[in-house]
Picture 1 (tube, rainbow, N blue to C red):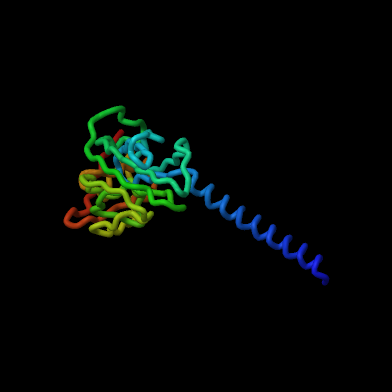
Picture 2: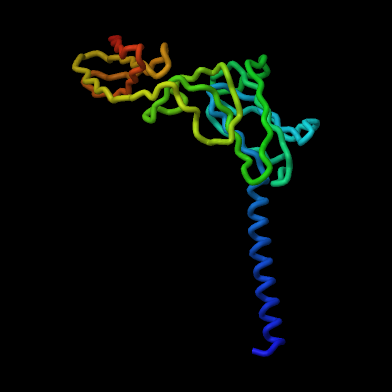
Length: 217
């Protein structure tokens, strides 16, 4: 290979390397184009995202309990500095937002510069179970904070849920109630005459498992 051909080959390789690097940088920048807020609490959270000086609001709106929301209107970038604020409300009804009631807590953190633009709002957990959905966990919900880890807070107790079968041998419909992770909350199961129902129960010491049957006509 003569020198001219070598120079052309080297130039081609340099252009190819630049294109690959440019594509990688574009991919990284695309990953910084939004901020995702994950609400790991049973409460509604009003989210506001500010610029570096906390002078300008870039995005705002509600995030429902135990849900997430992606924000893109702020024109976010990998090099930007942002602050995300959560104003917690008392409401836990996921069917509709609570409007504009007073805050029960207010917490803000800086979103780290770089590719991680996911932040997680958390509250202490008193009891959890791998067999139960997060909305059925028992939350303290008196203190809240932002975190960069996607892992839910470690619960004070890891509770076992177990299945309990119901055979309704009566000629009436039976309503069966089972305790859930949170004291005072129950699941209701309806068993028709002659039907079998599989119920999920929790045992949270010192709250014993109780069962109540109500016959209906």
